[in-house]
Length: 144
Image (cartoon, rainbow, N blue to C red; front, side):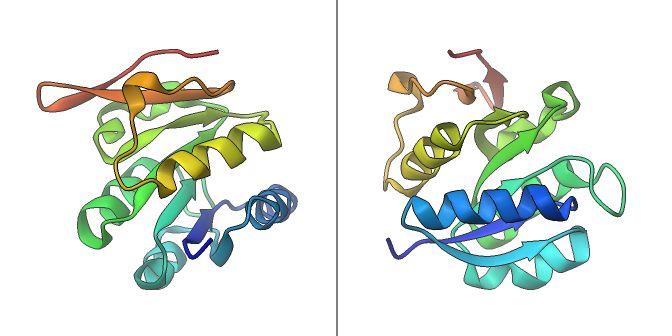
């Protein structure tokens, strides 16, 4: 797979676990970032981002997701134990994977994000909640 993944996670053991899942799924890890500054510094070389919400510099994940999507065209998937904190930042993402996560959920969500035209209407991934367009805002709809 030629897509590079940015992992935005401040807990090193979680980041390393996600890194292994990403590589096992056939993707390349472009970088691991623990805060906004590091995430934005690494964004140019990445296509997909897995973004936690609460990072070393505070609850900056939602804003990071928006910046990654809008400024760099990166496909964002939030990975968090607190999906209710995403709020309006859902407009920037394909969806959310709730912690504790399963490797299969991350692998399948990465495959979806790598598609040219991801079909969120037909998506059925356990542990992944896709965001669907409704007007100008995305709305969370729970899946599996």
